[in-house]
Image (cartoon, rainbow, N blue to C red; front, side):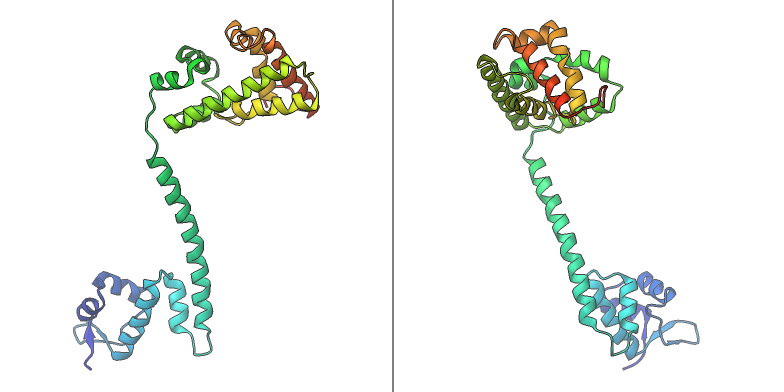
Length: 256
C-alpha cells in the first residue's frame, strides 16, 4: 500500500481536507511523512488510526476522549469508555425526548389566542378593560411580566380548563359559605389554598400576595359584585378565610 495524500484520505473517509488539517494541528492524527513538496502523506498505520478515530467520532465521542483512546496502550479498558459514553448519550436522549414532547404539546396549541377569544371563553372571569387597569397598576412588576408570558403561551384549551377550575372552586366556596364554614377552620384554610392555586395560574401566588389581592374583594365593587352574585356576603367571607389562612401559616406582611 502506498502512502496516501491528504486528499485521498479525505475522499476515502468522507472527510474534508480542513478537518484532517485540524486533527493534525491538535495532534490527533498527524501523518507520518511529508513529501519533498511538504505535502502530508499517510501510511497504512496512519489510516488504521484514522479508522478508529472515525468510528469513535461516529458515536459522538468528543475528540479529547478519542485521543485518550487511540493513544492508550492495550491495558486500557475501551469498554469502560464506551459504557460511560453510552450513559451520557442516554441522559441526553432523555432530555431530548422531553423537549420533543414539549414541542408536540406546543404544536397542538393555537397561537395566539385573541383577547376576544379569551373573553368568550372566560366569560365573567376576564374583561379586557380590567387587564388594562391592572397593567397600569402592576405593569412595572416582575409578576406582571410573568403573567403576560404565561398568558401568551396559553391555548384555547388552556383557557377553557382554567375557566372550569375557577368555576369549580368558586362554586365550592359558595357552598361552604352557605354551610357556615368559619374562617380559620381547617376546611376554610383548605378552600383558601384551592383559591390560591387557581390564582397562581399566571404567576406564583404567595400567601402574602394572596392576602393583599384579597383586600380588593371588598374594596373594588366590581370584584365584590362578582363573588356576591353567587351568595351575598361571599366576597367578605372569602377575604376573611384568605386572611386567616395567611395568618395560620405566619405569612409575612407586604408584597412578598
